[in-house]
Amino acid sequence: MFIESMSGLGDAANSPFIVPVAGCLMILGIVAVTSWSNSRTREMESQERLAAIAKGLVPPPTAAELALTQTPRPTSNAFRRRANIRLAGIILVSSAVAVALFFTILWAVIGVREILSGVACALIPLGIGAGLLIDARIQTREIEDANLTADAAVSKSHPFNA
Image (cartoon, rainbow, N blue to C red):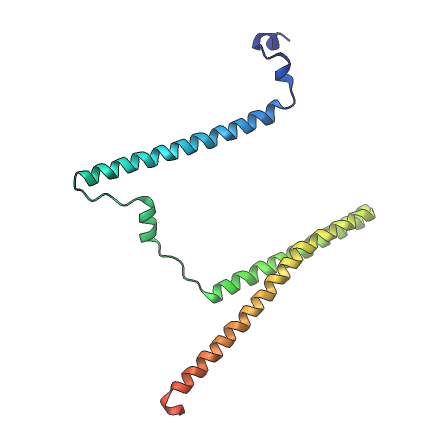
């Protein structure tokens, strides 16, 4: 009572919305300060580079330029991509089976029939996983066809096979 009268906020401090509003304002403040700080840093780096150029010096590379020169771009490997797709499909299908099994066991323990509606949640990862596994199989066939075509082209161009 005494603290409320001292703060001058009165009933506003007892509002149920004070915590969510304060949280949102805090997040907004963090984003605003971070954005301002990043723009100020870029501005200072730009001024330093312009000063170096005005003196006739070669400016040092930026962090983005260093990142491009030090790490080459990854190559697209069809075998690795297919393996990643197959792995994701297997994980999704197995997680769908686990979710369905969880709800089935929960229904057996509790005995409430409405719990079985949770098994329908397993259809989403099951469908996505099945689609990924089908895509991996299609990619396997395409790779095999490309290899057969390449082998046939090599064998035709070989002088002893003519």
